[in-house]
Length: 109
Image (tube, rainbow, N blue to C red; front, side):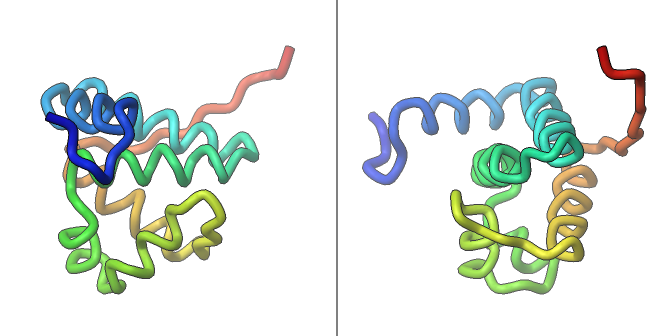
């Protein structure tokens, strides 16, 4: 049964990311790529779904030393996290997933 707070698509994403580490890692990669390509609104929403599915906002709050409610606002549709906060979020989630980032550039078509 679907939790009342989650729409069906969000619930499906949460379930898949929770049981499929490769999917969770792909979400993290997509969030980082979106952010680096000038789509911070997309990155925030992907990160929000990934945090919900993997680490949870309460654990993220403890690990990043930021209030859970503030983290929810930062990763909302209209959120505006600072670079320091984004770095902390990306860092904690990547550690939890056991991955590191490596940025690559290439000539645009």
